Image 1 (cartoon, rainbow, N blue to C red):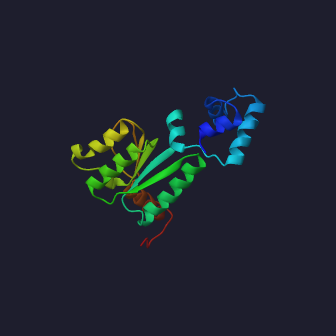
Image 2 (cartoon, rainbow, N blue to C red):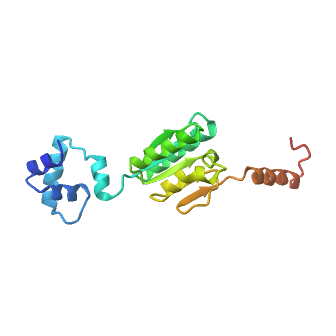
Amino acid sequence: MNIYDVSEKAGVSIATVSRVLNNSPHVSQKTKERVLAVIEESGYVPNAFARGLGLNTMRTIGLLCPDPADAYLSQALAHLERSFREHGYDCLLVCTGRELSARKLGAESLKKRHVDGMVLMGSTFIEEKEQDNAYIRDVASGMPVVLLNGSYRCENVYCVLCDDQRATMDATQYLIDTGCKRIL
């Protein structure tokens, strides 16, 4: 069953079925109920890719992760996926390992799938040689990119950086200030 079948069975245009699926106010209640009844009885499920093209969003975020078995990264993945789902987004995970060539292929793969944004998990995504970061700039030219636990200056790249050294110094200073004598 596809949208054409639904429109024929409900006796409405494809555009009307689309309006019903997108909850448009420009459809009478009677027509909406008729279309929804056909959808319900036929088990029709809209094609997410076709819908995404029409709405210009796939409601999908790409996650690039070097090693999902890593304890920190697995926790981050679980949290990110849950949060994105709560906000109506699906996630596509690409496990890249730590090789530059694999990271480039992973980013290109997600880009071809028309994700709405990309999260690069970890500082290993940033290379010392600026030309090796061209794939990040390329992706960021078409969608927002979030870099977790890394810093990279580029338009449309947003960085979340944990300063472990500063956090350790602050925690140690707190212990000293509260009278702790044997910190370790």
